[in-house]
Image (cartoon, rainbow over all chains, first blue to last red; front, side, top):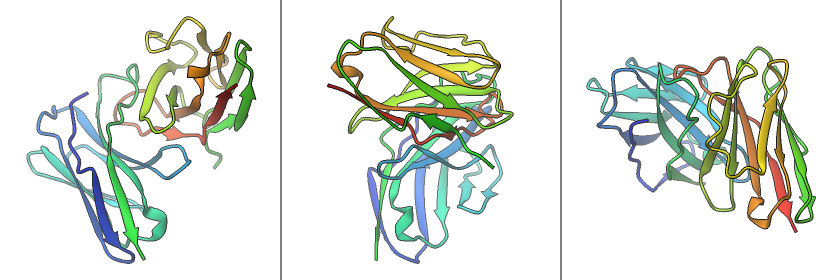
Length: 113
Length: 115
C-alpha cells in the first residue's frame, strides 16, 4: 500500500471542529482512503473511508483533494471522547485483504476541555 | 448488531504453555484478520482469511503460531510453547469481503501475558 504522512500530534478544544490532515502523494487510482482511530486501551475503530468524493457519516466527514494527493478528516464538534490516535491508511481495491492494514504512527489528537 | 467478539479478554499463562485465542466475526463477513499489538507499539498484521482459506501465512511470527477458520465464521489463533515475547494484545477484525473498498471492524482484543 502507498505511504501516508500525518502530523505526530494535534491539539484542539472541546466543542470545536478538528481538521486532521493526511498526505498521500503516491496514491494510485484504485487506492481507497481509510481512517481509523484507537482510543487508549481499546482496539482500532473504523471512522470513515472514501475513493474520490467527499464522504459524511455520523462520526465524521472526509474531504478528499481533487488530485487525491491529500485528504482531511473532519470532526465537526470534538468531545473529550474523541481523544485518540487517528490513522490514515490507503487500501488498494484489487489487492484484497492478503496484506492487512498497515498502521503508521498516526496523529495523536488531544482535546482540551 | 453484534460486533466482533474475542475471547478470552485477558489471558495469563506460564512460559511454555499453549494458548488458544478465539474470534467470532460479524455475521456475514467473509474476511477475517488477526493482528497483534505489543506494548507501546503499532499494530502488526499476522494473517488473513477469506472464507476458510488463508492465502498467505508468512506474517505469522514463527512456526509456533497457527490459525484456522472453520465454517467461514469463528477463527482460532493458537500459540504453542509460549514465550515472553508473545505477550501482547491480539486483535481480530472482520470485513464484508477482502477488498480495499471495505472497512475492517475490530474486536476489543485478547490481552495475553506470559509469565
